[in-house]
Length: 556
Image (cartoon, rainbow, N blue to C red; front, side, top):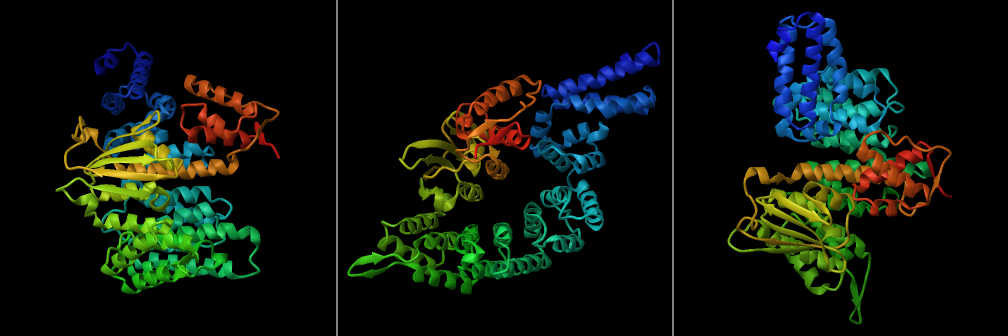
């Protein structure tokens, strides 16, 4: 390739061949040959450095050729950390995909899907991008009304908590800036990113910021003059802050979560439900918090009159029991065993039994015998369950059953990693995304075993880390809920005055055309999703976009 360009008759021919070289590299990338693309682009770089290509032409090619890179391939590679080193070399060739170019694109990009791709590509640059993201955040906050222009700082904060902080780096300035942003007056999505970032920061100042914010929001919710329209947003903010404290797992954070959860004040939302955020924390070192939770369980248990159990507030019991599901102290075991025995016919009694079986588990870690773990998905939640199985390095088959007891999905594990997953016509990661995105009521059964999955390849190529898959599934769940807020289940759709532009991509055209025909004909969102093999999130977002663009409206 170098010789072909060197032997060109003149500068124009050399430029044409250079352009063809870059296009060929892009074609190799789009076909999945990342290493070949990198080799060709490195050659293109060296030709520029050697003066073989006119500077103006090289600049033009590097500023435009990125437009034909396959966005789906870019996203897939960005989501694979082991590919980051090679992918970064591709990105650095194109001006738009260099770090500063991406940050600038992030600031001005208006399409949400495109912003998500930009964020994924920025993560490829790793810690090198953190300082730039923080500097831009600091500058933006000091010169803009964050309550109005919140999209950009939200995305910058997302990068701060997604990209690991360099070891030994001081981050007190970062915490101070996040603390200054954490106010009830800022939009909820921005609060979410700030609380996640502070929750991940292993620093006392971050915890103090979260505690201050919780107290501030609780005070606002308890004031009768607080406007009704603001209350739901404040409750969501409070929920995010409590979740961040629970994930910190420090004694002070745990005490704050327990204190809040046991308040039970209606104006604060369902505080007992937030206690379940402690389900992944062993809080046995905080005897006071454990004691308070045990007392709360005893106080909520039904009492008997003439041998008949009179319930008090049994829904709270499930949350209290879940809060202790990772705290197998003798006192907790004894009380839950009593509850499971006396109230086996009640949901909270079954929940206590499930937690006890989890304790005996050592069930997920014992190697000398096959184990069977059964539980209620509504109690544990699939994301929490999968995280526990990953941490426990479980080996076996997890079966998901519907309320009728019919198996609807199966996930095979080896040493806490996923070998395979099947749910309907979906397989592997897409199947897990679907199960998290659209939670199923029902139960799970884990049949553990010592030996590898039958017929399965136990090499690293066949095993997938569960944690990134779970995180992506939770992200898709959140995106699906946002789309459902615009186009809820059961909505009757009415065609507007204009039809949407379907696009030129054949697959996209086929899907969009079919969904548009159904939606314009009055089909509900659920029918549109059921009629297509495509991801339900993709369909719901399509409908939401058409509603936002007035191509469709909701019948009132």
